[in-house]
Image 1 (spheres, rainbow, N blue to C red):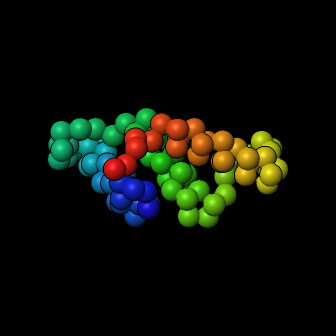
Image 2 (cartoon, rainbow, N blue to C red):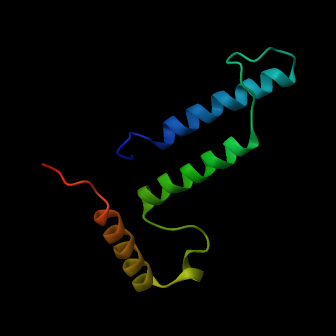
Length: 92
């Protein structure tokens, strides 16, 4: 789970609701929430799901090994963390 409480179950539930509304429109029901399904939203949510999966299993995507070995990834994560920490507001 992320600090904002984003989690895989909530993401799936949200996307299922969007897909259900799309299916209803396809069979002639008016949209319940006034919006329509958008494949960009599904793609965006697939990316969110992949980030959540990485947080759960600690592994990158299917091209993970093509980018670098274990040491490269360890160094990369450390570089990203240092950059994030440099911009973190000071706590009091």
